[in-house]
Image (cartoon, rainbow, N blue to C red; front, side):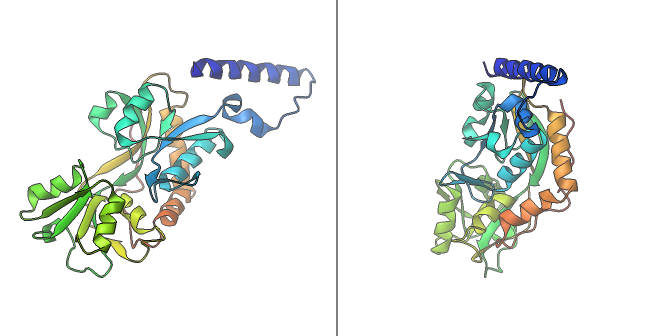
Length: 282
C-alpha cells in the first residue's frame, strides 16, 4: 500500500536524523530529504486542454500545471518528484477513490454531489461559462445575441444546452472536442463556441489560433475549480494546499501563471470572483 511506504519513509527519515545527531554523516542534501522521503506525488491533470493541462511530447504545460507545481513545491516535492497522471473528467472520482492519484488539478468544479465522494481544497480559480468568437466579430456580446446563430460545444456537454434553454432559435452543433469546435469556427461553419472562459482562453492562445479569436468576457455561470483529494487517508491536507495557493496569490505567481497561459487570447478573468478565497476545509 502506498500509505505504508510513506510511513516507512518517515521512519527512515527519523532514523537518519538520529544518526546525524550522533555525529554521523548522512551524505544527503536537504532537498533529498523533502517530499516524504523521496516518494513521488501523483498529480492528476488533463492532457488535452491547451492553456490548462496539456501534454505535448511528454512536456506538461498550462495554468493547472503551474498551480499544481507551485503547490507541490510548497508541500516539499520538487518537480522531479511529480508524477503527472492523465485524469479525464469522467474518471476523476474513481481515480481518487482507487488511490491512483494524490491530488487532482483538472478544471475540477467543486459541487455538492462530488463532495459526497471526494474532498476539495481551494478553489484556486473561479471560471464562468462564456463565448469564444472570431476576433473581428462585434455582433455577439453575450448569450442574448445568439438567436439564429450556430453555437458549438462538446458532445454531451451541458454548456450549450444551458444557452439553448434560454435563447430561442440558437442552432446547436456538437463536436467531440472543443478544438474541433474552433476548427469549425475557422471554417465559418459556426459563430461561437461555449464552455468555461479560461478553457476558451487556452484554446485561443495556442500558436495555431493566436490572434484569430477572442473571449467575449460576459460570464454567466460560476465554476469553482478545486483541488480534488481522497476523502479519507490523503497524504496531503486541505489546509496546507490552501496555504500554498494563498502564497502563490500573494507573491504574484498566480497572476503571472494566468497571463502566461492565456497570452494572445484577448482574455481578462472575472476580477470580482478572482483570485478566490478558499472554502473552509471539511
